[in-house]
Each structure stands twice: as structure tokens, then as C-alpha cells.
Length: 143
Image (spheres, rainbow, N blue to C red):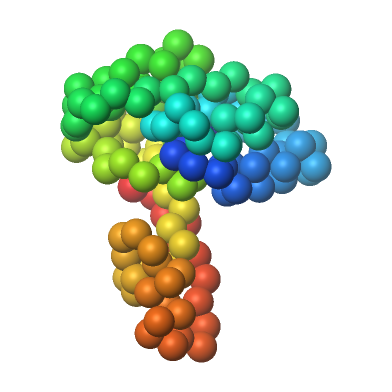
């Protein structure tokens, strides 16, 4: 059994796709336990609630470990830990501290809207279109 924690910052379209996939395919081995947003107004919070997944917001201005330790406390409260959990960054627009990455080593997956290493960072799709690429896609990778 894998307990899933999803971190978002906005619309939650990737999160919604993940939750739809799990529901439609009756995947019982992965349990969405919590959705955490870095923004109080994130549309994805409402979407998560429609799936019955609890939501929390950590929107303070602290950085690095100070911020991430709050995220870890919430993840652990919902039993998403390094032994049985997976943290999915689904449109999460904050950098993780080295301490967070070490704690959840090989338990963090990121969804990036380009074929890395091309077009890293923000506005990847716009960068790809502006460059004129013929093929683009997304990258899902462990952090």
C-alpha cells in the first residue's frame, strides 16, 4: 500500500488527472491521503475535495527547511512517510529544501511540462512554442 501526498500550487489539473486515473482504474494499492497547496486560492483544492481527499494550505512566506518542515508535519499526520509514502509534485511551484529531498529520497515524483533537459523552469510550454519545436511533451521523474 502506498500513501500518496500531492503538492500543488494552482489549478490542480495534473492532480485531477492522477486522482481520476486512480478512481477509474480501481487502483486500491495507492491511497491519496492529502493534497497540500502553497496557495490559499488554488483551484486544485476544490477539485481534491470533490474526490474526498483532505486538503491543507501552507502559504506562509518562510523558505527552505522552515517551510518544508510544516509540509512534512502534515504529510506525517496523514501517514505519508518515507517508508510507505510517495510525494507527487503536481504543479507545485516551490523549490524543495535539500533536507526535504533527503528525507523523502526516491519517494518524490515531479511532473514537468517539457521534455527535460529542454525548457526547464517556468513557462516551459511557451518557451517550447516560441522556440518552434515540432515535438514536445512532459517529463515525470524522481527528485
